[in-house]
Image (cartoon, rainbow, N blue to C red):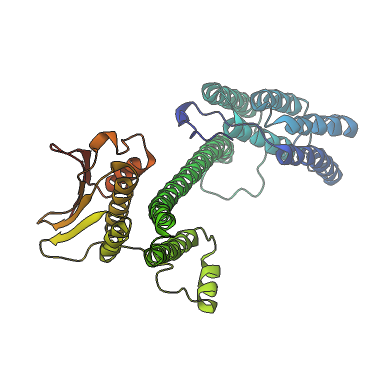
Length: 432
């Protein structure tokens, strides 16, 4: 099965596929049961003396004609037009031979006409083929009625209706055959239309299933990208701070143990914070929601392990950057207002990634983190006085790519580039 959605078929040119194994088995059983039924009816009619004909062939010949009229039904769905033409011709021959049974041959022809309408691949041939057989049958009926009218009328003993018995006989024969053939024609077309609608519904269901699979795969990929982005932000930032602090501790360990101890304490706290955030991120990988609930009841998460960081944690980011030797100023401008959790997390990650880049690459002394609550937007800006583009990763890096993705998710804008005088600026704007 391919991942590409199937193209819409031309339903006006749809061709009904042949029967499956179950359909073939049904036709075989029909082909076995119909001759047996024809034989039983033939024997009964001859035994009762209820044949409509004065003379008829021997019983053995009548049984042979009954089998010849019913056995072709085994191929009624594989070769519907051929079976219909064969049975139509045989019916005329059987009536010419004055076979006693007229019921089973009529039922066989009805099934043949129905099958031509229900299973005919070429709709034009199926339509005109049935019309030709029906016209031929009415021609044969007309021949029989003319012969009936030219012969002396039977006595019609017990006739008591208001119509002439001969006229009533003609009208009955015509009306019965009209109903017979129109029913076979109509129900055959209805079966074909029903099969086409079923195929169309199955096609729509398959399209819907594939679309749902594609949406599911897209959601999974988007979630993996988000997790990868968060993991990158968490690991890159905290490991950078730990590396700077560990290096500072190593350099001052001999001459200033107190300062080295403070640096190592910062490394320890940063490691715990990183582990807490990683636990929160890895928690979304749990597939069974009920398992999550049961686990949370038995082992409630500690503070900071599963909650998403946001605007309130920006001072902590600034403090971590200060502990790495960077002079960070953090300011909030405008009237603070509630911010959606997704936007707050994106702001936090953008500031986190920007400060990480400053610490790792910019060789800067100062950085400004500004959050502005504007009338129609929320804006966050991180600027430094470092080496600008030469020291900060560009769009080819995962960090800046992640920032652009985060901002794009919320319909915002991202600006990143060197400042006019010195340093580098990252500015993100989110719609209110």
